[in-house]
Length: 363
Ligand SMILES: Nc1ncnc2c1ncn2[C@@H]1O[C@H](COP(=O)(O)OP(=O)(O)OP(=O)(O)O)[C@@H](O)[C@H]1O
Image (cartoon, rainbow, N blue to C red; front, side, top):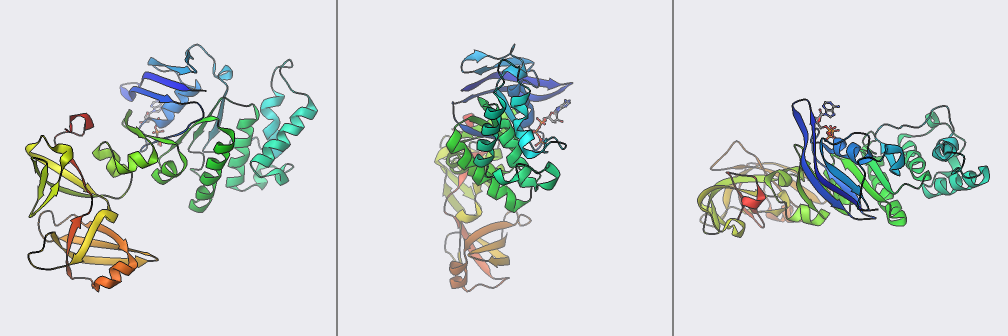
């Protein structure tokens, strides 16, 4: 089932939680709503579910306006961060619940319910836990059961609100891979909310980056990572170095060095910022007169195959540490020690004008 979100606005008192949000989700897609705490992700999810109503705008399921459709009739399955399993019911009873409470005319027979529960527990690979109670399960197992329970009623849309938020890092990682595989098998249109960029980039077909009640960018994980549409998206999606300077005629001047800035080709002497990811900062031994920004190697942390360097620029804003990531072998070959002066230059940078963070204005 496809979902269209049309100009949705939601106000709590004087606070605008959602500001004219529009988004199209295709049938069978797995979409992540990603953004910092308070940006409106959960509010949008609750409006899609029908648990909350929009002040203005509408939500369409397969082209049909859902405004008047009760949450019960929207055929939506939910999984929340905090396990919502019934404690006094076994795992199998929990999964069967949605089927048992159906009106008699729609309710499957006991044998059909039993078969369905067994299938679902196999699907989430926990059929051996059918007779246990929730308190006898790990956090990760409970979330998988919560998902099996949500799937029992064959929802057309699956909404997941930080489903792995309460779990430790290793379990989260396992579960998100598992969720991706499960989605590939079932193709239920799914929206999941997360503030963890790694989770969104790894699991979703498309990522919707939100900030302050608005959508900043929608794209595949690769698009939002490689072509962030705004400084906010750049900063939110990973560690980043920021250089300030001036842009003119498609070039940006940062101290003594220049970088190509075709994205702001029209600017003439405008204040600009260049964003460079730590893995796109090239570090070389200092040679007088060679191009690059001189910096002091403050700290080098070599763990496994990656060397993480903290560098203090020799000029400009010396209070702002730069971070460079390079291969451990490459770092060793440079034969540097802490305190040495090095040269840094960006392999790849993305330039935005200072005056605005509206990507449409950056021409
Ligand atoms: N019922 C409510 N009454 C008043 N304010 C609310 C209500 N629900 C949400 N808000 C406010 O709206 C904003 C968006 O909340 P929302 O829960 O959608 O954010 P979120 O992006 O999901 O954040 P988090 O990741 O912390 O859950 C927040 O500032 C929140 O305080």
